[in-house]
Amino acid sequence: MKTCSISKHGRLLATLVIFRCGDALCAFQREQVVRSLALPQLSTPPGMPPALKGFANIAGGAVPVIDTARLLDLEYDAGADPLYRHVLIVLADGAPLGLLVDRVLDVQNADLDGLTPAKPGTALNECVLGDLNREGELIHILDAERVLLAHERARIADLRNAEQERIAQWGSP
Figure (cartoon, rainbow, N blue to C red):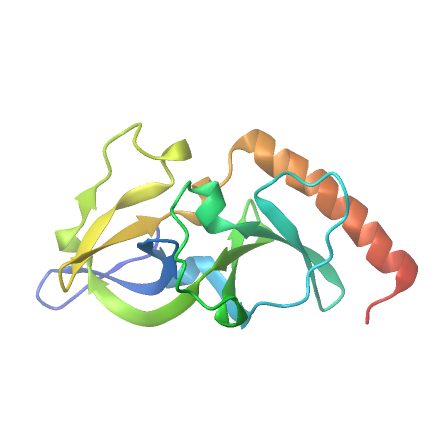
């Protein structure tokens, strides 16, 4: 884990952004989340991979938005209201990446001494660092730098550059 603190009792603490994604609870360390916003209007140019929902124009910058449930092969929450979905903006390889989630639930300090490390090979690109038990429900702690594979990051970077050129030609709304 990247940035954690040690409490006065010697416990390993981190601030987590907890969200629902499909049928799972997940979290990123707060330091990895740049911002959270309501689902913005997305442009959907042709030729996008299935997990890429589109691009958000944030202050004139093309930010790719990934369908996190689809990417992580999670079951969708049929009861989730699509009007209230959120996009978490994280940095992956120094570039902003939007992750579409069903709902951001909480930002809270967590005791990582109770983290059960993920078994190697159980998550794509080892993006799940481990699990925490919160009130009887598991929270999968994710690493934003590992959510996408290298070839996925490269493909999305190419698509982002093309979308950025389109924004530059037509101007920001």
